[in-house]
Each structure stands twice: as C-alpha cells, then as structure tokens.
Length: 357
Image (cartoon, rainbow, N blue to C red; front, top):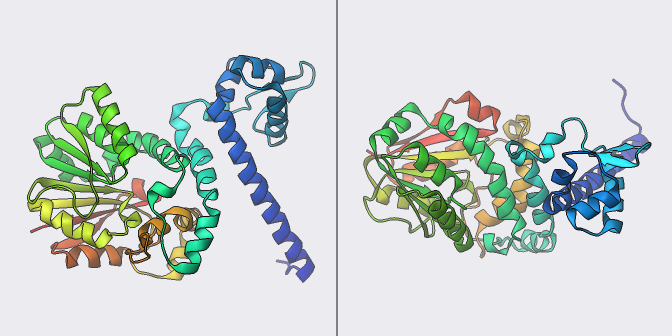
C-alpha cells in the first residue's frame, strides 16, 4: 500500500470529479436517445448517423454529434468501413423492457439535477420540497424503475401469511401507490381481494385509473388522498407502504391513520430501502447501497419528508428500523417486525410488518 502525496491525492480527486461530470452528461444523452427512439431504430441493423436521423425523423446534425459521443463512451460501436453505428454487445439493455429499471435513471437523475437551485435554498432554510415541484422526469423515472422490479419480486417479498390472506380475500389499501403499478399487479394476482390505491399526486392517480380501466380490473380502484387521511375507519385488512413511507412528511400521522382504517388483526406491510435497525453512521457506511441511496435521499426523499414548511418527519432513506418501530408502536400497533427475506436484501430493501391486536 502506497500513501499518495498531497498533489497526487488532489489530482485523483479532480479526475474523479471529471468522471462524475462526464457520466452525468452521458446519462442525460442516453435519455435523449431513449426518448427519441434512437436505440430501437438502431436495433435491427447498423446505420450511418444520417440514416439514423432519417429513420427516427430527427435532425441529422444533432444526431451526428450524439452518435460520436455514444461511440466515444462505448454506448455505440462505430465501423470505419461502412461509416455506421450499431448497438454494442449487450445492447438489449437499451431496448428490452426488462432492463427499464436501469434505464429509469436516464429520467430520474436529470430530473433531480434540475432541482439544484431549490435544493440549495431548502438546505439553508430547513424547509422541504413538495413532490409536485419536481419535473415529470422524476415520477416517470420512478414508475419505470419499479414496474420491472414489482413484476419479478413483489410477490416473493410478501410473507406467506399475507399471501394466504390475499388468496382468501381481504380489503387492501396501497398507500403512496403512484401510477398504480403495484396495485394493479396485486389485483391481478389475487382476484378474491379488493384493492384501493391512494396517492396525493393527482396526475399519478389519473394515469393509474386510466391503466386500470384499460386492463378491465374490477377489483381495483384509485383515489386521491393524503397518507394522513386515506380510507374510512375499519375499512381495510391490510395496508401497504411500498417504498414510500420514508418519503412522507406525515409518516407519523400515516401510522396513526393505518391503525384507524385497519380492522382488528390487520397488518401493515412496508417495503423500505435498506438501512440498519439502529441509527448508526458506521452501520450506514458499511452498506453497499449507502452511496446510491443517500444520493437519491438528498435530492428527493428527504426534501419530500421534511414537508414544505420543514416541520415533517424527515425520515429519508437512511431512517433506522427502530424509528419505524417507534412510530407504529406509538400509533397503537402491537409490534413491528423485520422479515428475513434475502431476496429483498439483495435488492437493497427491508421488509417490515406492523400488527394490530
């Protein structure tokens, strides 16, 4: 092991910053190409930049520059003999929907970066940022991230107890459902149960309702509602918070509302991002997910959770499980347990269940 000189350490840091800047710009341009259908247009065969522009019905001069950058970053392969560009080995990542989870960052990251001025402001004042303030790229990217994840993993994340209840037929509230991907998936998987997806963001509920009607789902519906006032007393047997509880400024009130709307013996199931059980900086930094999850938390989760006036719960992605337990037991629940599901841990999630007596 060799200790760097001060100059070498400074140069190394500058190099890292340059790499980060280039990566962010490339990611944004991949998103532009995805929006314009350039990768899909290239999938059948290699094309010159002019042929690609003509086939995609876009401007040739911009596409020439775009192709040069993609080739320089090894996102495309250039053939000198034919002067054409082609998808690289593994290029299905750009065209196969099963890889949407990876491509979702081409929407969510540029969307979050556009909020820099607001972030600087709230970092000074301690206030938060309402979800509606973020550009459409953020909810678009979030939906694109979770759709393939839910399709492959969500049913495996549910405990056998919960799946047994769902097969038998129960009433379920999916709180913070966004565009309703999880609600609709579960409604299809468990036709004996009824589902209501709640979200305070009206455009997302409108999209969820439209998709539900197109799919002809009779056992699902959607409603605009805040997490502190969803549902009616004793209406549900199961309440879901799927990767959203830590984003809520009203997380404490959401826990209390869950207790109110649940019938005796009801359950709350939370899918939260991976964090330690106890609040520890050392334990957080030991997680392989720490850098990525705190990046998203600093841009979105925590500003949302602080509330627009800065008086929210402010959980964020790093919220320790002990805080969840404090909120739910304080709301009247008998207990909150962490489920030992290795598949979820590998995907950087933890699964929690709160029980009502």
